[in-house]
Structure formats: C-alpha cells, structure tokens
Length: 298
Image 1 (cartoon, helix red, strand yellow):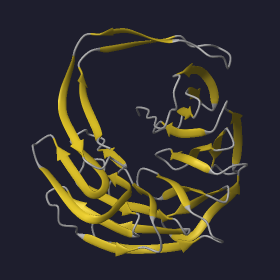
Image 2 (cartoon, helix red, strand yellow):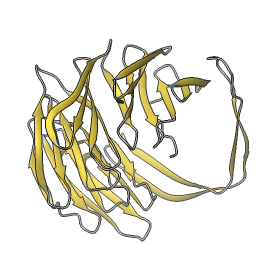
Image 3 (cartoon, helix red, strand yellow):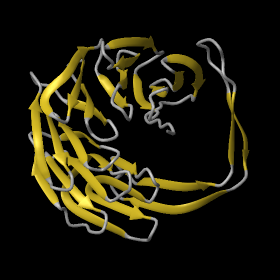
Image 4 (cartoon, one colour):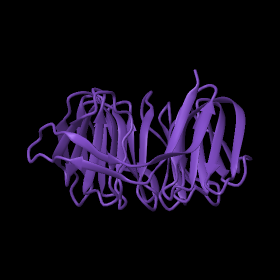
C-alpha cells in the first residue's frame, strides 16, 4: 500500500472558533482559504510509519519499512535503506540531527548532510519512542521491554540507561526544552519522570490506563498524558506533585502542550478534540474521525 504525504503552504488561512464557557461541544468553522500550493509530493512504496518536521520548518524526515528519508528547504535530500522497520523518529529543532528507532532494536543518529549514520546503537528491544530536546543537545529513547536511554547528541555518548520493572514497554516520550527532564508513558499504566542528572526516576505515578501520548512543557514542570482509559491527565511537578484528570468520550490518542504549559490540546479515538486553558477545558470540537495526531503553537 502506498503512503502519500502532501505538504502545503497555507498563505492565508483564517479559522473562526466559537468558544464555550462550559465543557460543551462547539463548532469550528473555516472562514477563508484563499490559496494552497503544493510544496512537495512524496511517494513511499511500503507506507510511512513515522515522520517529524523541525521547529523552523527547514527539514522533514520520514521513515517506514526499509527506508529513512530526509528533505530540506535548501534542496538537500537523501535516503538511507536498511533491512528493517522504523518505529519512531525525532528531528532536532533546527533539523541538524535526526534520531531513529527501529523494530529491530537499533538506534540511529544522522546529520542532515549525509545518509551515513554517525551513531549505531543496539538497544534492548524495539525502539517504540524517541524524543529530542528542543535545543538538540540530548535525545531519549524507550523500548518494548522497558529500557530507557539518554544520549548526548554531539558527543554520541550514552549518558545512562534505566530498566523499568516487569515486562513492559515505553510507549510515549517527551522532553523539556534543554533535556533536563523527560516524561515516559509505560504500558503498566505508569508515568515516569526522569532527570538528565540520574537514571533514578524523579517521580513515578499510576494512572487508570496506559498513556498512549505524552507531552512536557519547556521548563519540565508540567505534563499532559492521554490514556486508553478515556482520560486526560495533567501532572504539575511543582513543589508538591498534583494530578488533575478529565474524562474524555473515548480513548485519547494524542496530546500536545504549549511551551509554557498554559494551553493544551487532546484528540480521541471517536474524533473529539479538546482544548484546555491552564488545565481548564475551554472548548470541544467533533472532527468525526479518529484523531491520531495533534499539535499546538508555542
């Protein structure tokens, strides 16, 4: 089955949002879309498993069965072919570096200028999740099997690794801006917070279902997690850890958090999108199809 990506330049897009004061469904209407132009068309024979774009929009990376590709606005493009399947990938904010995790338990690190990996590392299980810090200096990786890794990107050094208890998988990862903290969603219904300084968890808590998606604020003090128990969790890692939970209408597939943590968005399996302001629900929109990915501006 062929996978297609269409990348659009939206030169003028106005969205009108009707916000409700209470936690009620609202209508999101498109007022005007004056011009849409196709920037790039990519065709992948065996489909696309993972993709990411740099914060400055200069580089796009995709991965699937047997390939990793990178595209940049300066025209530099390459493809790396291998015998395996990409499970996860993350690109640094400037697009300089790309970290990739595979089903065959390999972690690769690439520089955007070359398809030759600058790092190959044998992990202890399929690498289901991987995440760069926004400053591009560190990246975290988590495996099916429960091993968690922290790498320093420019020295290519493994700083530490942590093995979770039991037969578990690290399903979701997110980092603070400078990589000082990371949040992990684990298949045993736990959420673990790490510090760059040590492989010993800073905090570990249990939820009613496993976190399918997780996001951390830039300063590392706030976390949002979406669970298969149809719940959205907000975790405040201040002096005293506090947790707020909101019930969604179905399993939550995707979450995103603004840099400051003041705004959040979540998408569920039944197509409902939830928007929050400072942990309080602001509006809800029905997309009428499964929401598997969401994003929010800084």
